[in-house]
Length: 564
Figure 1 (cartoon, rainbow, N blue to C red):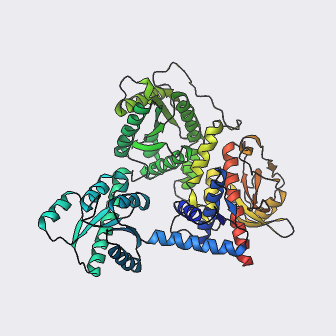
Figure 2: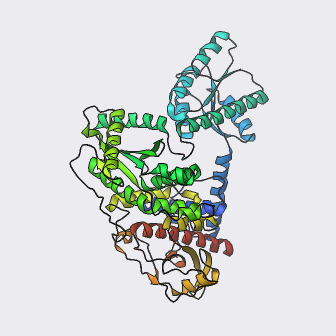
Figure 3: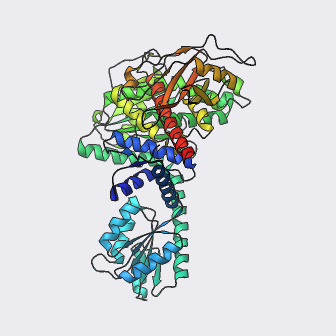
């Protein structure tokens, strides 16, 4: 399961490098394996021709190789060595590789710039006197490129001249070593540089992200929006902004305390991250106000996105808060609140005479204020005659309640892809996440035995005995094709005859989705159950289908390991 090759030589290496971007170094081997397989399948859907390796031995070997490479990349710092003397390059590479560094080399300044953009080294050791781009010019180029920040540059030269030392420090060099340099001294300088890089990275994160929600903060928002406005004005592409303000948020803080209020903001941030495209920028403006920058989105599409966000917030924000705080002393009081809503304002750059970031924010803020004045839980477009009050409730009877045609399905895929290695059924917390995102009362997964019958693998929300009985009653179905997300109606199993164990409140309905291996064979399935009847939406089907795919690949890997 899940071991894939793109061909030979450089293509396979390219695939390894591509998949490595998706790893969390502290993830389990199983989770990394599953994410490799999922990412490979995602590459396959984009026409890269990924095909399963035929041999179980190849599978085990490839996963071992990839795991070793990825873990090595995660642990090793990258050092770029630049010198026009090949012997010096070989010597430094040999010594630094023995010390455990990942080493890239270049013999001239132009090649060094290319390597730096590809490898993103933390430390660069460069010779001063080189033909073409010398060490001073290279240092200046590296320091002036914002995509390489933070980067620590050590100048290595035979010239022990104070004037040269000062010139290079003024060009941005961080350290200066005169040849011949002792290796232990060079190692010490590299470690100093790595400590500086780590501290700069941490400071950059603290300066640009909100400490509570981890979203970009107002400082970062201003910088990003100014850049997007400049790009839109230059290219003529549309640009829109959504201003989101939670309704009656002060009452939450006053009634339940700031700890609950903070949790509301965190849950809202998670919801926004899951609902927007990878190219959109959600940010916390301040307090309970959030801003979403939508590059390439016109006013009509932005309004549709805002309407969808308003519905999702009204339907799922407060329930997710109550589930997250179910084990706290305030849990009973939280259940008395039915929902938490938001008012949203939409503005587009083409509506403004003054096309600036500040003017765009002010327009979206004014539209959100109009939504508040109109009664809250509404969407308003800046200087628009359209009146949508009260906001029509599409509820859960519309199969597109969480999706606006093809673009929303694409957004769901982009959002779920960011889960990456966090999803593995070997991790008990996956079922907790699954229950939360589906709004279900009970969830679980099964594996298919040799007789073709489901055997319970794990469950949450009901007893094991109740779950075992439930899976035997389910009408299982497949969600293999993406088109089925919009067209296929999942068979719903009524659970009126499900016996309750120990006085537990049994679910009223459930659905089950089959899990398949890479050859399309059924190997397991996942299920979700609710204590009240609900309408299964595109969002439910997407999450169930995605998790079923992961389970199928994970069960296949388990079978391969057992066989080998």
